Length: 293
Image 1 (spheres, rainbow, N blue to C red):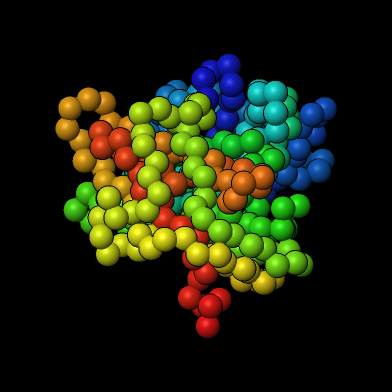
Image 2: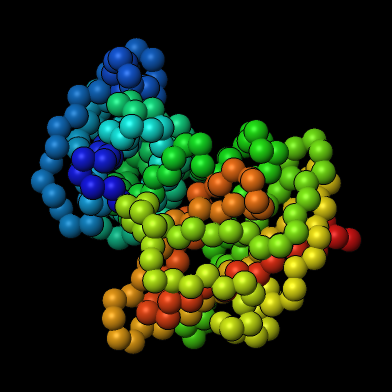
């Protein structure tokens, strides 16, 4: 998370009814439901319900004024940010029932956004659940992976969850040509690793190829030209070990990915736990098998 002067993210959490429309429309803010009002007050700091500068509040929101469950994001930085919040839903006994992730796109400097905390089952589905903040990530809105609309670059870049076994980590960086013209790649994506504060991580050698990390994980072949027609995709393999020996382990939650020279960077959240190895292997772009058939 950013320092205290950088952002404040408030999760409006309570133990009973769902927030059906939370947020008072004010200058520089976005309400979840026009005309609804929300009165919120901070509560004590129970274990597991804070994340750095995130604070928990109670609210009486919506037409009924009932206790509610929702979250509030305030951007105090000088650039627009896209926030991704991971929350754990718990029952009245404090037992974790589910994890849910919410993305709030393009929060302007000084803007406050309030949203209800529904689940995939729809409005009211979180009525009897409380929430604990598990993780918060914020990236510049202009560098955030596109959710639905195709960005001006014509390509969408994301990362998958990866695989882990015996200290070896393997993850894919994926690029989809969502534009209307062919997109050509030749070589390796450029990665700039960033820490919790989105400042560059030092002391890590980003290697071309994954063979110096492990064999048989893909990503060790030399690069070849790749041409993607609209709708086709490519990926690049990341491989690392999270071995920890002497020194402080290195964690890089964020990675700034540049697909090819001259391309606009995209900031993804691979959550790299690099241990003290100081190495990350990056494979070349290859066309996805489904697209190559």
